[in-house]
Amino acid sequence: MAVNQTMKRISDESIRQALKQTTRQYLAGDLKKPQTVPHFHENAVEIGVTSYDEPASEAPHYHIRAVEYMYLMRGMTQYMNLETEEEYTFYAGDFFQITPGTIYAQRSRPGTELLFIKTPPGNDKVVVEEPDAVFTWRQASIETTRTDYRNDPEAPRPNSVKPAAAAALVNENEEILLVKRRDNEKWAMPGGVMEEGEDLAACVKREAREETGYGIEVTGIVGTYTNPGTVIAYSDGEVRREFLILYEARITGGEMQLDAESSDYAWVSPSDAAALPMTDSQRQRVEDVKSFRQHGVPSFR
Image 1: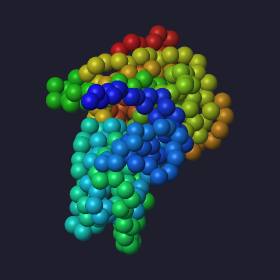
Image 2: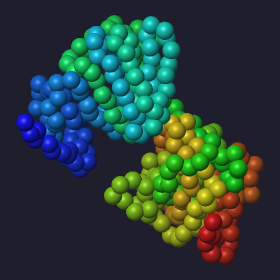
Image 3: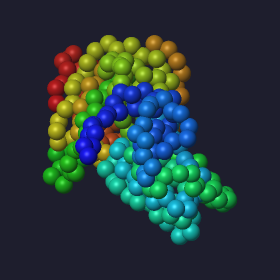
């Protein structure tokens, strides 16, 4: 007897649209509740994607029968085994298993995305009483640290390139505004990674507003920085190659207000900045600001 063979697809676009409305989207299983995206009916397994745009956590629980398999597509997540009190940290690219009866709590960084497989399917989740210490652990954010390398043969191999922008804000005394980053305890000009739907000029304006509270206007380009030897390794597993444009800008309004990424700020002359803890790449940018202010010629590094 002939078997009807076919291939079916759930498009990435439809999954992404659905995940804008919910953190979890099932792709296969025997679902009892309707969801936005059609799924493949399957009695033996549940498969889906969990995506967190904001910090997220799950209260302590276990599964009676189901084995859970997880593939961390991006981000960083941590699990606590309540019986052993062990903490497990998983990074992008990790594949891991949770066996039935394991009592665990979970917390994830923003931007974390998991592909999950659960077998057998069905609601066998049992929530357990949560100790105060575990609740405190879940509510605390996962701190990410960074290590900077410049032309270092021991640097890890980059796995990402993300366009970024920074602002050289200089006052009437020719002092540069610097912020002290929490992830490496070093000083830097405010800036960050470009987001979907914006150009780099819009990116630097948003980052300046978020990190300093100031509205700014871009007045020039100090330099471009794309040295493949400048690498930033984050504790969540990302190893980023440098790709940054440093803009000259002026403050148009607002009041100084640091965000959670920074612990302090200072207006510092380029000469005095040399005495502050700073990465080599950031120190080069400070020197380039000084040169740009004197000669008006951008640097390309």
